Image (cartoon, rainbow, N blue to C red; front, side):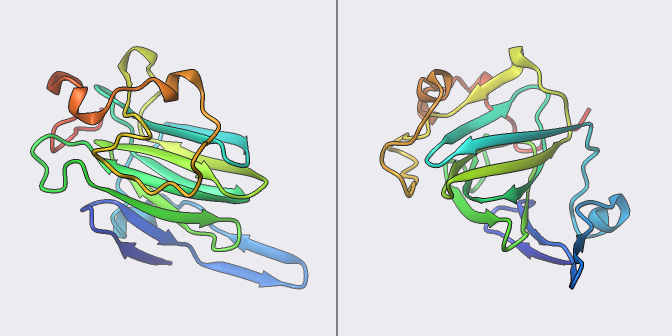
Length: 188
């Protein structure tokens, strides 16, 4: 397994070992001790699977309290995955990074609690699987507008398919500080 650092401390790109032969392939997608030793130290309690069509944009989501660390992997298709640092007093507050995840590159993205996360489907369809370190809690749900001009995310599609909720989130500067995560989020 290979782990790549990103400009955000704690946000990691994981390249799990992959074994292929004439029968097909095998990939270990999570093993607690091995991942913990590489910096993915979250107690996952929920797995999610989404199916989306081309140009669907989901995000930018977060929870406070009950922040969710996520381990994201594309089972089929390709996505443009985005992470935004929304942790108050973070030196990278308001900055974003993107990573392309696909069934071909077999990469995973680890997103610690305290970051907003979203993705855009680049292929005809995509199945995205992600583990979460806390349960989905609707009353703690928050989001940042995908097209926030202050963030300047270079989405590869101008007019994505969005839910009404995702299209109505506020700009980051309009979110009250009491609704933003702190620099260090505790897992519960």
